[in-house]
Image (cartoon, rainbow, N blue to C red; front, side):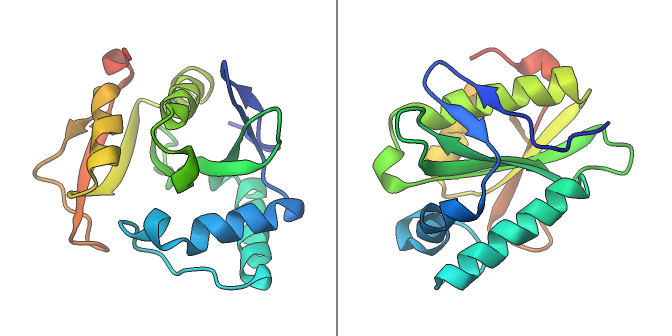
Length: 178
């Protein structure tokens, strides 16, 4: 599987594309906004340098094929309003974890549903994944609802050792039907 460079994916309203240094303001916003990060266990970005360092890290991981990280953009603005990624690939490359975030202003408009559909289709059809997992805090109602739309199953016996607040979900391709 060769996944570099990051493929551009299109949905009816969105373009999913690689992030670049010129996106630093939007990435800084996503990684520093208290509302976006309230239910995510990650270090907050505080400066332009933090955002650019994150973009460089993502780029290096993209090149090493450890992650496929897309910025979610509206074609008319080309500004990143969120991100979605496949990462944490299993050794046999059949399982990956999905991660995502979205600016507060873009929430509730169906953008993440479109982005999720696009990357699940890509993961299952182009990458040959058999399972996509999602780790989300149990009290994250919006994320749980999104996962429910796609038929993700709660793995009640599975725990996230790095974040005790997370619930673990999994999806196999036969479950996809939004």
